[in-house]
Amino acid sequence: MVYLNFTDLSEEAQNRLLETSKEDVKRKFGDSIRKYVKDNYGCFETIIEEEALRNLYSYTYVFNI
Image 1 (spheres, rainbow, N blue to C red):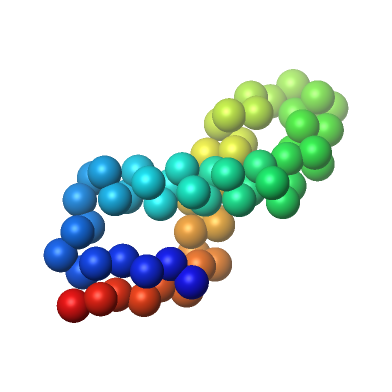
Image 2: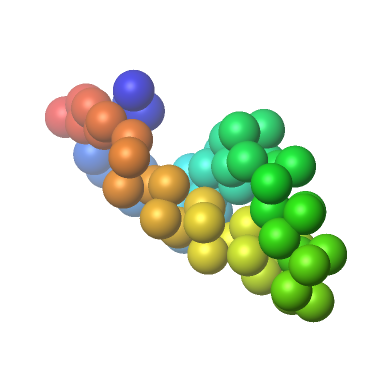
């Protein structure tokens, strides 16, 4: 679960969530993404960022008001 303060949905908070998601994606799928990039000549960082955005939808958010 991700706990957020409802009044703190600033750009910094959004960037922090994206960075957390990137780390999760790298930890969970980093090896398979590296293999995919090597086989298909893609950019690792671009794919990580796309997957991190998708990964944000899998989180359960709790907003503190």
